[in-house]
Length: 355
Image (cartoon, rainbow, N blue to C red; front, side):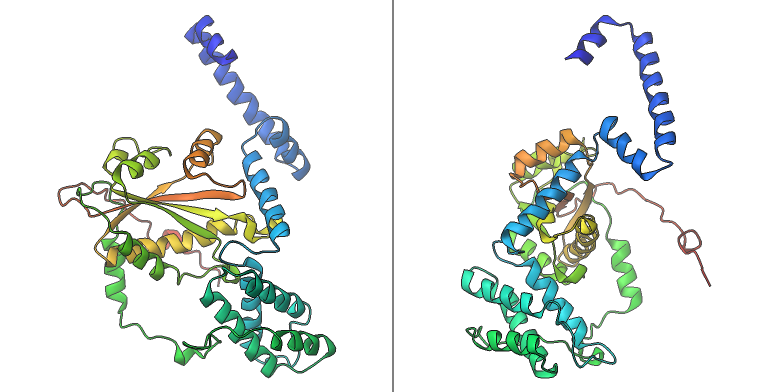
């Protein structure tokens, strides 16, 4: 209200002078405060609130993790993390005779909680069961391990059908018949497309692409993201118009995905940025997957600004510990639609040789 009143009362020249003074003062203050961690914190406490939402989301995620013990509706971040830690212990060279004593009891208890709670994905449970079985076969017994093994053996067995979900050797991995030139061509084929045909994007095709993209790596295999999907052009365009940078083409978006990170997958603040790393990895694979299925995409940057965050919160009904990572427009590219050339940096610019 005060800003609007001042805009009406003050001449534009004076408004411009005040704006320049504010910018100069903040730059001066930033330079002084940036010299130390403590004063940097004071700066963002008193003069700039841009990190407030991230701080709230991090704390909310920490509390949600604590209250649910790492269990979400269909998955358990704690179980996924610990089972992956066991996998890494199983493939070590040389492998220790005794390992994972510090968290094996927690892992078995979490597996038990997932079994009795119900609703956890069957494939996740099968993977956990297979890795735990392999672990108890290989590891040497101690009092802690023996007790955990006894508790594990007393649990009901998950459906044993299907492929064994235990670590395997390098030469047993799937061999893709893809040459470097073919992959390079795919990378060049994928471009940010903003003009699409008025053609419906099928949900089954999106699911197929997501299944492919889900092979992307993530820290401790937690995969702390979800894909909020819109295939109704009216809804897709409405959501696409929320962030900056989509003016002029948002109304042309036939389908849309919002990649949303989940901070309730982490008990500690140190991991608060992992959602962006893992979300970026899976998003790139998702765009390439769509490309192989005949669909084009445009990644849409998400600005960490309160006004936009509130709009997206309301549109998606997000929890405090959920953060939008990026948006992705999806559709069948219009043959006559323009595509920016977007010159990429050379290898000389990108590689910093440290030898």
